Image (cartoon, rainbow, N blue to C red; front, side):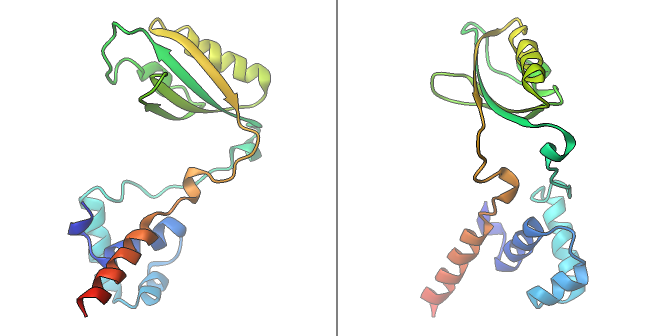
Length: 168
C-alpha cells in the first residue's frame, strides 16, 4: 500500500496528523512545495481514502467523562461474526473504539463514563445484548499514550530516506 505514495505524500500526512489545523500556505512552505502541488496531493489522498476526514481530538475528561475503561467482551460461540452482531454496542455513544480480536475474548471496547454509576449503566447495556456471554472491565488509571498521539508515518518517511541513501 505504501508504494503508491511517495515521500511528499507521507510528509503531508505526517504534518496533517500532527496539526490538521495549520494553514495550507504554511504547510506548503514547511514542506517546500508549491501551494497548488499541495492541493493536488491532498485531493489525491482524499480521493484514495487515505485521508478519511479532518476532525478534532476531544479531551473527554474536560467534558465530565472522568472514567476510561477497557472492556473485553465474549460472545456466544454459535454466532457468526459480522457487523450486525455488535452494531448496537458500536452505536453506544460512550464506546470510543470497538475491535474484534483474537484470544480469549471476542471483542475489546474502549469506553468513557462520567462516574462509576455511569460505567455500571454502560456495562449493563453491553451485557444485556442477547449474544454477550461475559464482560471483563479494566479501569484505566494512567494513559501514557492515546490514539490521537500516534503518528507512525515518520517511520515510513525514514524508510524512504534510507532507500534513497542506498540508491546513491
